[in-house]
Length: 71
Image (tube, rainbow, N blue to C red; front, side):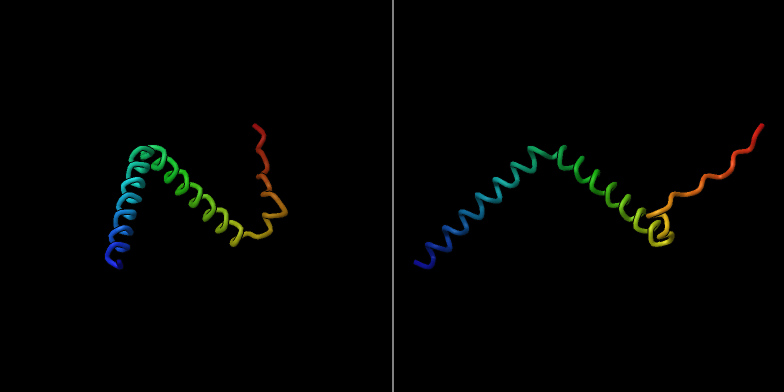
């Protein structure tokens, strides 16, 4: 009886893995684009966190623009 349950679990796990593989392969381009977007978002958040850590007053105040030189 125990062997039958284990066999059933293995069969179910195999079917699940097969289904997941087919979903991943069917959406490979979308997953790659999403991964690239998440990497870029992560870089942007890291840059923002670094900027705020280095200059916390910029949360409330914007950068002052340098004076323009007249021609």
